Length: 174
Image 1: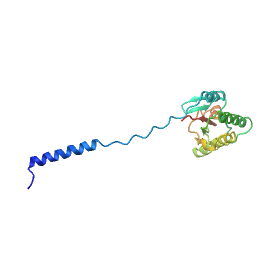
Image 2: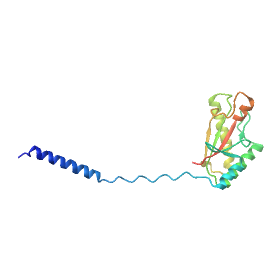
Image 3: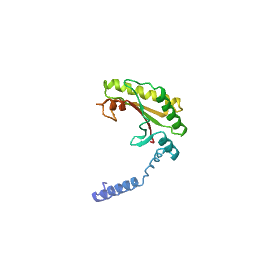
Image 4: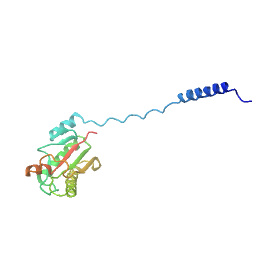
């Protein structure tokens, strides 16, 4: 014997309410724990950075003038006083327990984009080799060859082009 329509409707509503109630009782898995905060520099590390000529920028702690690593036209090797300067900075950072740096190579605007990208990478790698010699772990150094894409001075003058032929050493804090 078929159920009357009213009774069938009540049964359907009751089943729907029970289904919704049971679904509402399900537990949601807990959210994963938050990421640990990025490492911060200690006051001693900040003092070392300032003593070596680093300044806080939007990129991190960047080695500033007059301590920047500059290169002659079409050069990518480091010798003499510049070599000792980079080794000194590397040793100081390593002794202070600073573990992560980024090395960005740059060029002026003379030459093709591809040539300048390769030259800027060679410059950056020259600095990386000295940082490793000074005690840094190679796998804690990020290296980039940025070519002529980020000038800091006007490439229309010889002095400006000289400023752009550089390698930036940046202590990253994230």
